[in-house]
Length: 319
Length: 274
Image (tube, rainbow over the protein chains, first blue to last red):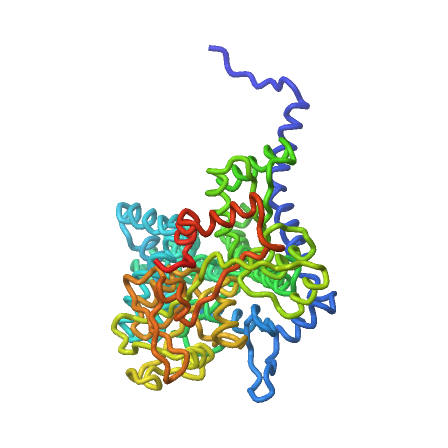
């Protein structure tokens, strides 16, 4: 047998191939840039057009407004009205409240599962748990939303005697189901990437498995776990279908977590299809889109940066 | 797909000859789906006629009729005084045909002891002036409001007719369709909702009274078509003068039992009582 001889047949073909692959890699970057530019472009009349600002200026979207002389001023989202009201507060509050419930539900479960899977589970057990939890990520959000709408809502209402069947608690728990796999995967990876040498050192000093996990591995992997939580939070903010179906979508400002809520993303999904092109309402929806984009981008970027630094710390290099 | 087909047929027919009749129907967005189905069914039996349906809202349809830009105007409301004046000055004699009736039912949970509501109570419920069932003679429980998303024609109609143009209460939960509203009320003993009148298996309808002393009327096709049910509106075709030729044929077909079948399938009530 003659040894395989690598002999490049044509340099320019390789050159083209390489450039093509590079272009693929940059396509995503360019797409993100273009998406941002176009979404923001549709939102600019809020800053430039006095016609639009009469209905929806930054001031009107942020602060309490008095709509009737005999009633107290309030934040109100009523875009289809004789006098349209575009306060973003109820929507922002709804988004944050749903995300908080989702985090409170998902983070302990996901981190607990990650610790068990990475530290205590037998190899066999781990091979079952890991794919099953990650399978949760494969469930379409509309299915989770449907489950929350039909099953979970009734269960929670009966359990707690809630006034509102569709509420933030319901939406938040369904949302939590969607972000458990995100937190779990990142947290588990972080714990697994703690070098074996550190574990060995701890064991050599006589630490039992519990001590190894909680005084050695967990603190070392903490930034990674935090990054998982942050990435999960980003998903919770942007997730649309689940909250659209399960939260009741009433735009109210309240401190209660069992009231209904309308989130930013659900508002876009529900209203964009029928909105009058070029109206103030249309511009406001794109403004919401821009805000969501920037917010989730910053959150995700933060999470990724933490993970990046963690890798450098453990491995001494970028990988 | 059927719309595409209809458009393809339209283009083919347009290219054939001008003598092949073309009827344009423009106006109400609420009625677009109804008009499209009417047109499709009609064109199946009348290959020589082409009907082009477009929306844009009742106002733009009426304007188009006055400016002679459409043969038929579909509208979910009557002309305003100003529109009537403009039509008169332009010499347009508006001929009115009621093609269908649209009734909005009020849904309650089957175990809700409340049987009927007045229009005033309904307004107070949906504008947050009445928030507890005990104020209506029911149990001491908070009323949970269900409605439609703000892009729905039903939302706008309810807001104008029942709430007198006021905003819905902020805590009213908007849902994406009539079926969702029915489902929500069916699951919620404190719930109230509104929507079309053909969904009565899992919920009950509230009888509606015009005022305290009036008789309560249940929403049914018969009560809507004899106009005794108060939350209903007429859906119109407006034409310039009495219809003639193929337009007349189309209008007559719409009011025939074949047309009424399409009206019923589209979720509306035919003009004649069944």
